Image (cartoon, rainbow, N blue to C red; front, side, top):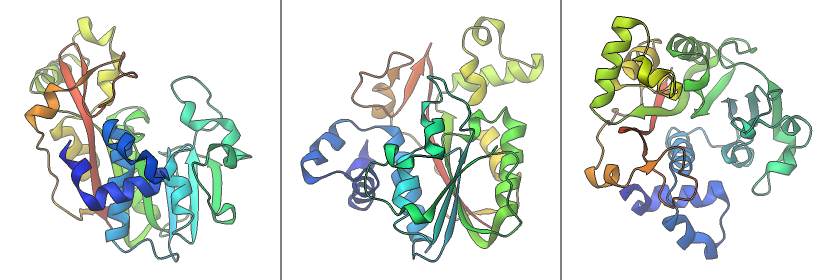
Length: 271
């Protein structure tokens, strides 16, 4: 919750979402983790010196999200990639229309001449080595087909980044001790306990701290730009919203399903 009181982060959030001054109170009232992911990711890129209109960006699983359009005003070129042929309620952010009519999804004015949209898997990036100055992916890498697929995607991201290039990655992470017991059982039995896995396969997509270290950080030679901070505020956890009936909740930072809590984490890595 306190991050919404950080002037620098809040200003970036306003810019990415293209909010007019009358919407500022609403932004504070509806604190949503997705907005946090976008803002902290863009702020990381800015601090890393990548928003100077001379850098090429690649979005992995970026759908039609606000950062895609925001970056066209701060980059040389932005390639947005996703499985745009898949249309369902769950993946509404990757609507096929984005391929031919990105204007339909833009929250603000953007530079159409600097945007390319392509169908592409995050585990098989169709670009040459050392092509991009920066790569971004927000709450997508956990959906690529398991932890090994996430590690493969990280290797692909490292490959297409130029030396000195930055990867800005947000994903979902467990924030409760109960999750570690679940993962111990999964390691022993090769799956979650049936009582949970049969009904809540969503758990298989999230990372524990140890898994994030293993599959996202240790899978490449990229190094964190800043130390990884796993700490959470107890008061924030107490406000976790119940999943999946969470759309009407105003504060949407941590989620709770059957006592298992998770939220978002952002990491910035340099090649």
